[in-house]
Image (cartoon, rainbow, N blue to C red):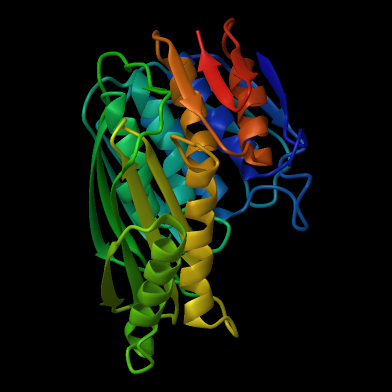
Length: 340
């Protein structure tokens, strides 16, 4: 049984998501201690709990200690994967975070899997918005042969949530390697700026869009095709997601969630600045997608090479956790990440 210390590095939820996903994908049992010890409210929260319970049901595993606030769990993965997964999030926990361990686990299923998520938020602070998962990260997975389809039936913001999302995962028989060494020139920059209908009179989505476009043009001298949409949601909120692709195959994304007392213009500008920072740093993959792709790189039998501008604490934690499951290690050298 693999022992994982949940307080390692940034000590956050990514450790538990990566651990349980890789446990199911590799068939290796795990014990995780000190879950989210580095957080103000330690232990399992709703989106972590429902995500790992979904993985256990997905592979017919045995999960012990999985309760709200729990600081330790054990998990023995099963070997028979179902073709349907249901996730119920009672709070405004992140839909994107709940999906993460299931997407990792599905690599071992090697068949089409349908996920139904009821409840939770499609947009939440410190979590990937569903637009980022669909429009950025899933495109990177697609380069490894892992296809996905999303249908957002209802969106949700904090504090009510209430989202409804259906996702179809189509993992390949074997993941391809991901080699994005040269950045190349910008090919396309697009995105979506959204807000709840409550904010339509204030034109929040348009203001986020205009600010982001202006900043991108100012710094990168390219135009951006950013669409706007107003969503029927129970709670008030806004968000913007941007994706930049390059001629050499690079995919970089960024997102920003609107907050109370934070002007829409600032939200758009911050999203643009994160994207610009990664691109000007020579990256072929953005800082947030990098930490999420790490388990998939090690699950592939092929070599991978990626160029980054910044290694986040999430990325370092995921590298540490993922390497516990494999004999091969990831190598970092001069802002390059190698899996050989």
